Length: 285
Ligand code: PLP
Image (cartoon, rainbow, N blue to C red):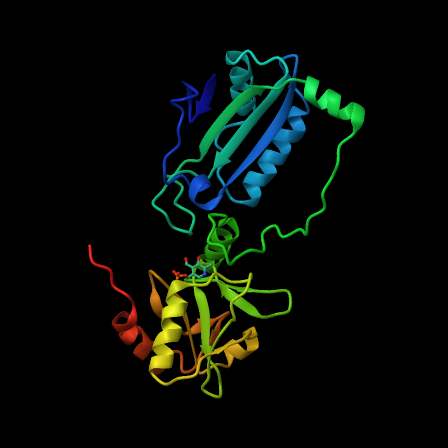
């Protein structure tokens, strides 16, 4: 079998993309699958139109002209001698050092194309009997408590934040409550002085830094409250901050253009930031 990767037609076992490909690390990629009958593509213009739309929606550079992509698909079909089967075309934002923000325009998209024969016998037999369905709640993807690489929404949010002069984005749920950051947990020091962060559940990642900080707070004799809070409460908070392994405790001074507190890192956030490493478990090498 022959696979197309970034301008080359390679044997199946040798075709590979970079370990830091954004498709692999963030799900930052789009794809199309076309049916192939008698070596010909079915509904190619519609698949191409949807591919182009997907690229535009995600601001991924068009890797090559549609005609050229069509040529690649035909080459892969031909080189694999596929008569009846499918062709798979994937375009990712490319490979770059891991960062939620989009890389610069010098990073080119990754293009992968495979073709596979597919027997018509199995679907034909199934069609004679009909198939069964199992219903499932549509949770695509509402299991934010699992640290998966399904990070495309987080990438889009971070990029939107950056375009707005912000470093991080806070997600707000359907009831108007802040869940967490795109890559951090969200905290406020409410007007009455209580430290608040959202309770665990499927809406947030149980951040390790969050857990350690809760220990720090209790050690300090403080009583953190794990509950939902709204944006308005955050705008009016004394302080706000985020936690993550790479940022530890990072003070937040502005949310949606609203100044938090006096617009400078708050004393509690600063103290917790300084204390943090005294409490975190440090492993030897
Ligand atoms: N929430 C989300 C969605 C994250 O991606 C991260 C870290 O990347 C966090 C919270 C913070 O988790 P931790 O403190 O374990 O780094």
